[in-house]
Image 1 (cartoon, one colour):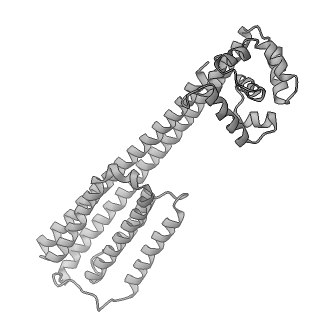
Image 2 (cartoon, one colour; image 1 turned 90 degrees about the vertical axis):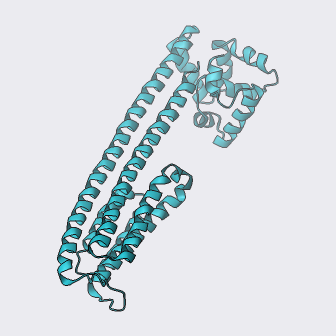
Image 3 (tube, helix red, strand yellow; image 1 turned 45 degrees about the horizontal axis):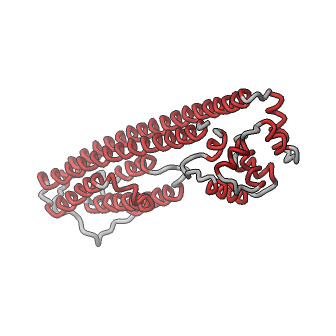
Length: 331
């Protein structure tokens, strides 16, 4: 009976597919976020060169603008650099914080740039997980807070200021910054909500998968019992042999051969060099005992049982892709 092997394949396959779907959808969500950042920075670079003629700052913002396109272009390669992904996210937040601080000082702290600190804070939950990335979140939050406080209380007279802004200009720039900070805040909320929906979908899919696997395992157990009944075993016989096996009774192997008279001869036809202890293990696996249960029944360590199962697999020439219990159940 090969059912258990197929159930394991279904379990692993469904889990992998569910996880892959979540990662793919989340990656697409990140790309849409980066696309919006691209348009925001592109607007600012055009706005500054058009209305204020500040070529240097416009070029700087344009470089940052195409940086978001670069991040979108390496979408398919992020899995290969999984360990670097979190560091990259932290680095981007620090970079954006520095950019906000620079423009806050560059515009004499009168253009409403400080509102973007809050947009950065609200973006953190979209990119990081509170449980897994708590230290990173604290670090980013602390960095943003320190920048905000320092820029608020210090003048930084020695740093360069814009030569293209006049007093009347601040009202226009401040209005645009307020509008875009509100838009960014709303954008953060929308994307966080979409991420939350993806996580809830993953949880629901996982629960459905677990429920399905439990039903399949239950069906497999019933089919195994049914097969035993076909072999002229009563329910009492099944309970008796299982009890003997679980209690490591010396009568188990003798009773097993009475109930399954053809099993040992058929095994020996495959390899007559199997020793008694290996045949004993084969009998336990025929009853669909897993490694942990065999270890408990035989007073062995799990490592010792795994080693014994490996030798049996080699002697019976069972492929590593085939579940050894399923193979023996079919004999």
